[in-house]
Amino acid sequence: MTPSQALAELRAGNARFVSSQPRVRQPASDVKATASGQYPFAVVLSCLDSRQPIELVLDQGIGDIFSARVAGNVLNDDILGSMEFACKVSGAKLIAVIGHSNCGAIKGAADKVELGNLTGLLTRVKPAIDQVPDDGQPRNAKNYAFVAKVAEANVRLALQQIRERSPILREMLDQGKIGLVGGMYDLATGEIHFYDNQFR
Image (cartoon, rainbow, N blue to C red; front, side):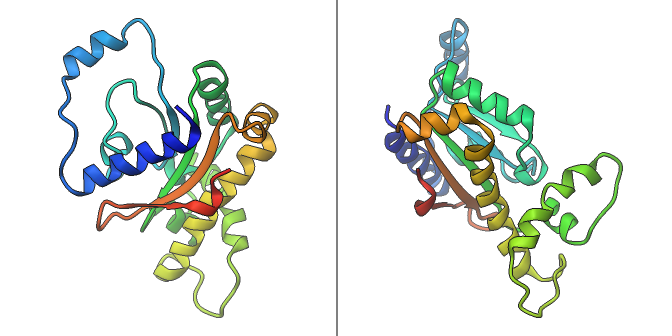
């Protein structure tokens, strides 16, 4: 599978999900088939939000994709190392970072929420907040347009960080061995809008 084919499969899977026509699967058989090894074609970083169960919304089954989930789909060293494993060791052809609409972590960061260990996590969203130009409107969770802009900036920031912070993944990207793409999941429709200009 090529990176382009991997992205096409994610698109097709989401289309099946939206149209309520998922593939018929045999979970018990899939468990047995993958027990001795795994060959996922993509690694997806998405949010912890319970309304965005990434395997379901992409209509992927056991052994199909690596899934990393954390509030705000922020990147850290552990997730970056997991991506390196997924691509360099296990052969995944695509890295996808998928945020979602109305994200609570984005709202929390915009409102400067402080709560235990969550405080440190939300600080990782601040660079995305800073990238959104000030248009004179409120820069808080009640401004849905602002929240949407920050959510997109946050995805694009993760894409940039993946390339900048991992020489292993950067080399694979430059050689065309893997692809990198961002996207946004719409909680209201179930659709994922992929950012075509970020595929590289």
